[in-house]
Image (cartoon, rainbow, N blue to C red; front, side, top):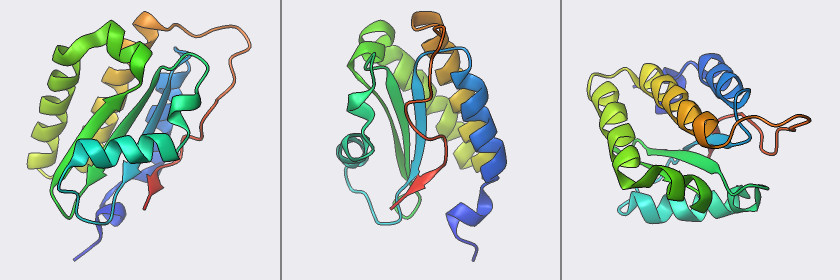
Length: 142
């Protein structure tokens, strides 16, 4: 059986992140967790901090955390974007991602989630002149 990472189109996901971030000062990361995650939100919070996502200038980073061995995921936004979007947005994003994942369309799901997250970030945190990419766009894993 192929590993979860091998089932993903990395280039397409990274391109979606780069495209979404053109319109916002926010940052989006995707993390694939190879171990079981009983509490995906708690694990995502640890990874969020480990990746330095709490250190962005506007506190508007978003992490898409996927634990394929547990068949679980979490979408976690830093405090500034969470204040703007609220729980309903995160719950809707999770339902959309879950639908794609249930159908085995993992790359499609991640790309759709990244685009949706990017639109929300752009609405509340538009791109700024001279904005630099604070975090790498590559898929992270542990």
